[in-house]
Image (tube, rainbow over all chains, first blue to last red; front, side, top):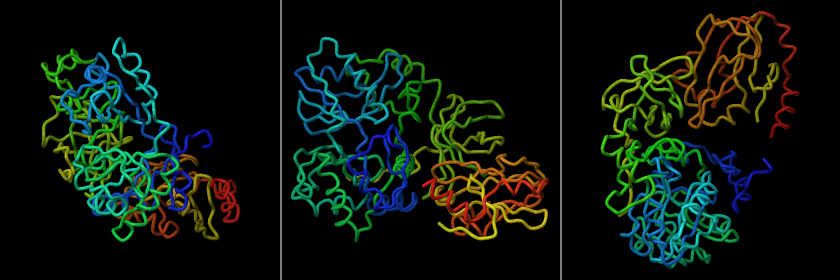
Length: 368
Length: 127
């Protein structure tokens, strides 16, 4: 485990009972008090995540907006200062380099928050696409620690540690230079759980104190530290995609049902031609939700069959701790993607039946 | 970590309780703790023949599926069907809830396993 990277919060893990796992080259907590308990805490109270492994890449310069318009699928041109949007960075063939959040400080200054596992690849890709655009691209991933406080009580808890009126920070907006427990932070009302909440970017030296303070002032409200295990079950229930599962270099945003974040009317961008062709013909594969009607737990990569014929594969699957049943997402040939139909999931040597259902297993609970 | 005297233990964290030719097999406290909350146990079919080291059962937590290996060779003569509806019993009482009973082909295979004391030391090294 010694060649794994460790976040500034690593020394705090043991005290909170973390079980560790190797994730994207980092030694990260998979759970603290137990996955189901942590998952429930986020749905009903609040949970605190260490997400310092995420990558942050800064784009600055007078053509920053134009460059990002060309690089990304969503419309960067309509963003307000301090706004955040979700977007894809695609290859020419429409496959996904990464999915990310774009933080707009001002017209010439943006921060991209990217997946830990893709950070080096993303940075290299961004440099390769720079061409003649007048921009500076800097990988700041090593400079930030990041914690996320998520759940219906997140605002009330965090408010106890800051003079900034958090009710004035809307969903998908950021605020710079917010003092939390005295530490200077970049705050955004974003998350990856389907709940209201905040993501807090701060210096490594401040992160351990802010982490402990949040747990301390939120204790009576039921805040608990949450590991990557529940992070995944939470995002999955809320139908939020994970790179490498629902989207990848081989699965386009349109196949994953995320066409809303691909804006064809904004001008040219990398992957536009391929994605537009896909849109016109309709993607050959479609992401579905399913629920097991026979015993078994579907897992990432398991084949999906229809009357014995392979029609796709499971992208994410779980026994849902909150719903008490086994559910999943699968990418299947579009002619089989009909709500209510029965398919089979190949689980080791056996198959088990599943029904195609709406993939929003949990309705998002954001404050607008 | 809890261990119990009088059992045989494997390096894969299964325990064996011997009753004549019959071996009751379960998972240890160390194993259930490492797995986390167990939500599904895929039991073998009655009568299946296994060699020592074969996967005889898959135990799934919310996070992942983990194989369990039989420490002894033989034929499955009983399965604990209670685990189908109550898999969490393996968390609650790992030594009270066996998974299968195997009629052993060769009880000398037990000599390859650890006693309680040796297993405790083995786990300390794993930590």
